[in-house]
Amino acid sequence: MMRIILSAAVSADGYLDSFGGERLVLSSPEDWRAIYSLRAECDAILVGAETIRQDNPSLVIRDPKLRKKRLAEGRNADIMKVAVSGSGKLDPKLRFFTEGEGQKVVFTTGKVSSKLSEAATVISRPELTAVTILVELRKLGVSTLMIEGGSKILSMFMREKNWDELRLGMAPILVADERAPRLVADGQYPPMTLVRTERLGQTAVMHFVNRSQHRIDCNYVARAMHNSLLCEPVPNRYSVGAVLVTLDGQEFDGYTGETDPTNHAEEEVIAKALAAGADLKGGTIYTTIEPCTKRKSKPESCSPLIIRHGLARSVFGLKEPPKFVDNVGIETLANGGVEVVEMPAFAPEIIEINAHILK
Ligand SMILES: NC(=O)c1ccc[n+]([C@@H]2O[C@H](COP(=O)([O-])OP(=O)(O)OC[C@H]3O[C@@H](n4cnc5c(N)ncnc54)[C@H](OP(=O)(O)O)[C@@H]3O)[C@@H](O)[C@H]2O)c1
Image (tube, rainbow, N blue to C red; front, side, top):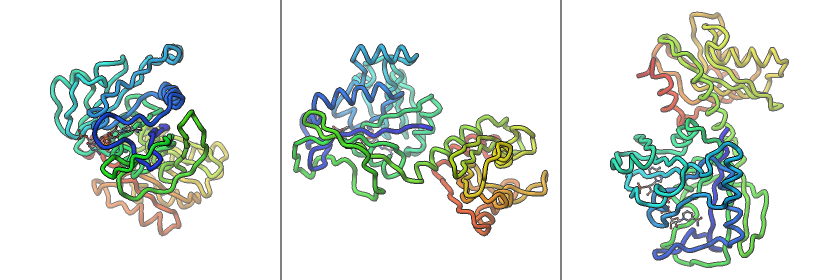
């Protein structure tokens, strides 16, 4: 599962910066040291294009001890740098691109200059959401991601509830200018849980966590997606991945055709859980595609199977398209007392994995 850490410093009245002019320094030297150590623990750091254009940060790890530690762990001394820029308008001469040995990645919705393509790995998608970005970063091997703003980026990840920890430094400074960027834009955000506070010089640092069920579900659907990549693409069969999580926290992974070509991913994980003597009642089954209700190869389809074993929740990314059958998994499960959660943000990637059928 990917650990996503948001990191920001704000003034005592909640601003990320002043309006215009030089970047406002909000972290004390002690706070900066802690931020650098945290960065060095991560695989990648992500920032928005406006922060890169305005502040020209290098985001390299300078402390020789931290560099040495990363090398000893078998990692690059520098962290992977990730930029998000819908417009693709980023000058490759900025320090983001010219400094540090780590991989540079740019997410965009359009085309970028050939010079920028030479300076970074460019990933273009029609629309950029937190999920789209996270799916691609996972493919690049990122398991710990630090997100350092600015406001638009933090808003996107917090609105989509795709974060685990927020490290928020507060400086004894008042900006008091409503033209300045705030921590997040206007919108609706779920409550956070405060777990720790500390004083680092003149910065008060608050540590929050996101305990929402949504975040937990996102992680497991992403894991199911990863499992689905193990399926051999077959023209008459979807590549589906699954994870079953029992109430006491046991986890079982599987994918369609894992032990028998006619087995669906749901059957694989349920069989593994039963073989391990796990109690399935009240558990959750995560799948990439909606559990089936009609099939030729077996008498029992996956939705009745889930109901029969007393699973309480079924969470999936893509409603089964009407390609082979008109599936009614959602209705069948709900009628059987199972809570059904569809996470359509994952659908584009699941369609991509099933391009052998759906494209
Ligand atoms: N105090 C702190 O901890 C801290 C940390 C970081 C930044 N900051 C401050 O934050 C301010 C910048 O914040 P900001 O909100 O203006 O900008 P930002 O979040 O740094 O970057 C916004 C830009 O990112 C791209 N972007 C974001 N979401 C996107 C999406 N869903 N699809 C496509 N593109 C997307 C767009 O780039 P394009 O314009 O290229 O399309 C957008 O204009 C600066 O003043 C900076 O100093 C403070």
